[in-house]
Image 1: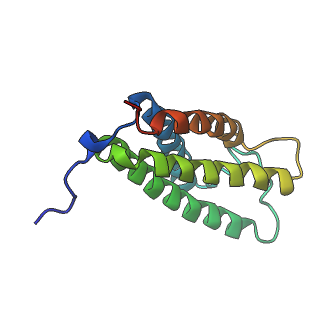
Image 2: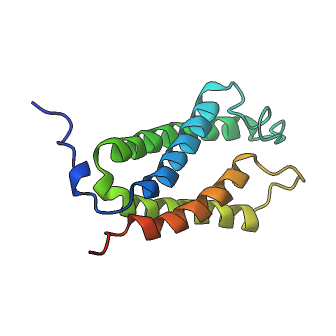
Image 3: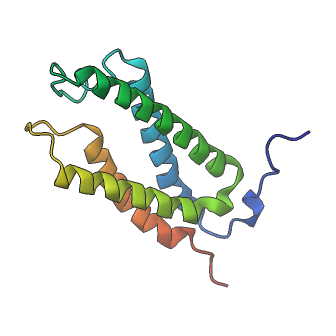
Length: 143
C-alpha cells in the first residue's frame, strides 16, 4: 500500500526558479513554527518582545504554540509539493500570497502597541513580493 501518491514533477510546465519562493515560504513557516512550539514563551517574549505579563498572557503563549504546530504542518506540505508535486506550485503560490497579504493586513490593522515589530513581518513582506514575481514563472511555458 502506497501512502504517498506518485511524483508528478514531470508534469510541471513552469520555470524551476518559481519554486524557490515557495521553498522560502516553507522555510519561514518551519522555523517560525518551531520557535512557537519549542520555546517556553513561544517566542512571544524572547523573540517578538511582547509583554505577556497580564491577564490572558498564558493563553497567548498557548495560542502561539498551536499556531506554530499549524505552521510546521503547512511547511511540510509545501516541502512535499516542491519535492514531489511541482505541478501544484502555482496554486500554492497563490495561497502563499493570500496568507502573506492577510498577515501584512493584520499588522497594519492591529498593531502590537509597541514600537517593536514582530521579526517575521519583514521576511513576510519580502516573501510576498517574491511570490508575486514567482507567479509569472510558475505559469506554463509558451511554445
